[in-house]
Image 1: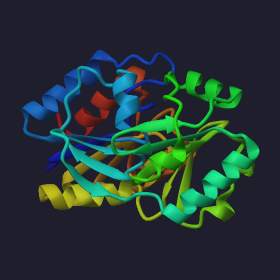
Image 2: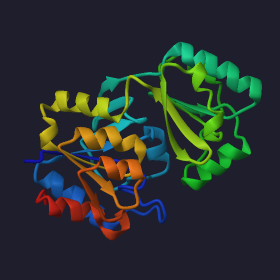
Image 3: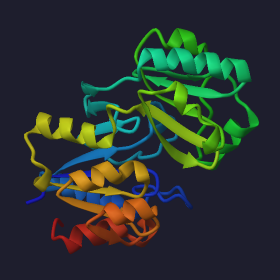
Length: 258
């Protein structure tokens, strides 16, 4: 019996095209919680992006796996899982970014900042309907743990040789999130199960991107959205309809969760 459901945001709860959550998503999440089924967000987004963009306003969740699974937070704000970026990787990255005059957006637990807003960064953020973060001193931000940073480059230009402890995921032609390779949505999922006394077989997960693959394979039932990446669809146990075609409700009913 399913006791918890995990949802990605972009392309899963929130359609890429319209940016408007379908009524069926509000109804489904509310119905799950009325049945006592826990609901979690598992996203590449930070809490700042979710709040500033009003991305999931009106939806209530029991917890949030943020920054590609690098930070796990209960609904009351209690942090139960952390996997920050290696400080030495960050130091090398900042030297590299500053020498080239590039944009870098960093996220810690309580704040985020971007060093400069290049045209590539501005366009990528606009394309995903995200307001640019405040300008700030990234070296000062690095005095506390950093859970994610974003670079705005073609993928072949990412300096992965300088970042041996980092993993990456792409969300735009010129937009990439980098985070600790020791973390990820699958690891945050495992930490959530331990915290709430759940087993993988009791969980269902929805996603659409390659950064959801670990989550989709770890859950007892992994569901990919029809418009998802090839990798996500191949990793899933079931491919549902697109979000705007009520795909979340369709899968929940197909598996008799609702």
